[in-house]
Amino acid sequence: MYSSTHLLLPLLFTTFASVYASHQCYSCASNPNANYYQQRIAALNINNVPKASVDCIINPLNIENSEVRCEGSCFKWQSTQIEQSGGVTFNVLRGCYTTLVNSDENPSPSGGGCQYSSFETTERIVECWCSDDESNQNRLNKLRSSGG
Image 1 (cartoon, helix red, strand yellow):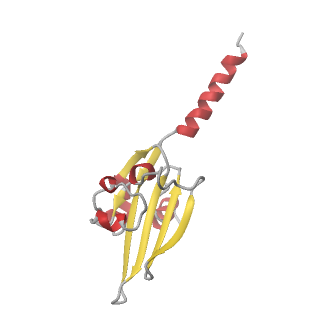
Image 2 (tube, one colour):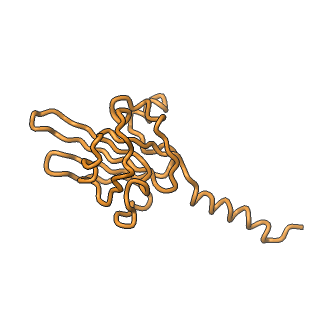
Image 3 (spheres, one colour):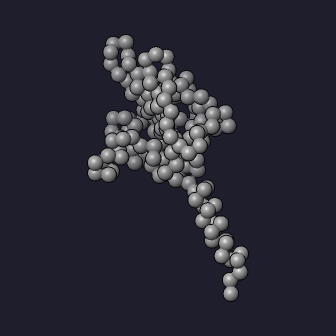
């Protein structure tokens, strides 16, 4: 006969595993200059910025080649900047939030989501946090993977 302890252990293990489970996040940087990100992201661990990759913007369907295992939130930082010439520049940084940012100095919001801000007057910044596998992709990836 099973004691109540034997019945509770699987429940506790399942709860603990789901809270602390790791997941896959995309990891790439579209701008080869890590200082660019350091000027814009508070408490960035500059040595942990992924090597530059055109996969972040030019060919987002190849982003699957850049997955990393994360213990915390996935993170996507995106910038859209209007240049003096009238052109538009896009920059993207993806990875594990706890790897990219000193979360003691700049904690991620609980529950995920996005926040919007500006850098100077010509640049719009979007920062997103999430905790599902491959959740820091872009809208194009989601549409293609869902057939939409």
